[in-house]
Amino acid sequence: MELLLDTRDRGASVRAMSTSVRNQLDMTFDVRAEDLGTVRDIVQAHLLWWHIDSDVAYRMLTVVNELLTNVMQHTAADEHGYRMASLLLQKVPDGVTAIVRDQDRCPPAHVTPASLAERGRGLMLIRALTDDSSVSVTPAGKDVWVFIATSEVSEHF
Image (cartoon, rainbow, N blue to C red; front, top):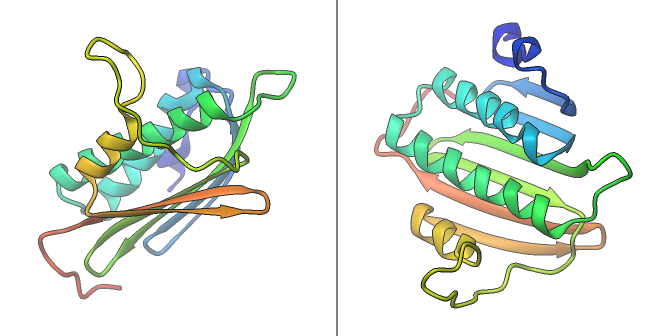
């Protein structure tokens, strides 16, 4: 597992705590936009480790990246530019789930962006790439849950 989390060569500055146990990655971190690549690498390594097929892994990686990008855009940064978030990624018998938690209590809103707009397509992207999703507003912020089904059921849980 050490190799999955070694970010020394990237000069990463993610302040994080993570736990990886059988089929589950639980991360709480303060992150800056330039550190999202490190988080993506960790997620990608776990999906590979869990033998998730490449199509499902790519979709989940794209969705997690979009959700964390939304954290960057919609939550307040501390004095060093960090934003607090958490990610729970799980391999379940029929797919992969992810929950991204942040400190913004406003749920995502569907907008119709202008054709050349560079923003406003995140919710459409998440709905297109996932098989199910939901949002729960909590006293501390919100949880965004997504599920992507795999083509085969695994018996090794």
